[in-house]
Image (tube, rainbow, N blue to C red; front, side):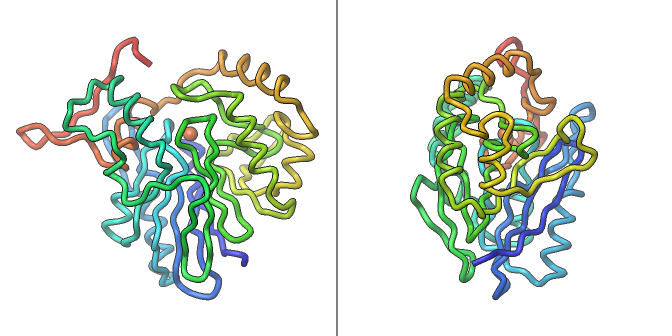
Length: 287
Ligand SMILES: [Fe+2]
């Protein structure tokens, strides 16, 4: 079955959020939503999420799932805001526990911060399946960028998060804690083993050099033939060398510090202090 896919591009973080819908009904899933955040002022804004809400309401959709492909390091998730207004269950990969443990330590979160994934409604693992109306979703565990990364294969569409980008841009970095370029290569092979005509929807786009427009949809066949990092039969050794060398030159994403603290809590802010005020931490010389 071919789901209808509507993309929402957030230019501030180069993130693409998706609403995936059963073509024969009203059931839908929202994948990788964005809560706008201005770091300089510490202010959140819901304009990106409100755009999705407006679309969902205008189409009369019933979002049954609010899915995260992973704990994003470059934008805050709007999952709780969407859930409150639209319903749906918030899902992520079960290895979120590893991510929570790692960053629970980095941010010196006390014992009140649970590292068992219980902030989410559903923890998925490889081979799990779920439904969006008549549509079936299958879960591939595709670590490498982070330990908890998932690819959601829904009908003929694969939502790969930050594993593969558009063929002319390649793949995502593998140098975050728990990341691994070798593991990434194996995960990419899993995605490339899907039928060639499978549509691939990527989690970010940055316009590759020479390309004028943002793009987010491609196919398995196109990735196999043309991906500049892993296409055309590139070997694991070649990929690992290229990826590790390139990662050593990359700056941290602008919003990594707030993003991790919020996203490891399923999009919730840290608990307020006794005045009711909410603070995010900046760990010095730790990331
Ligand atoms: Fe990411």
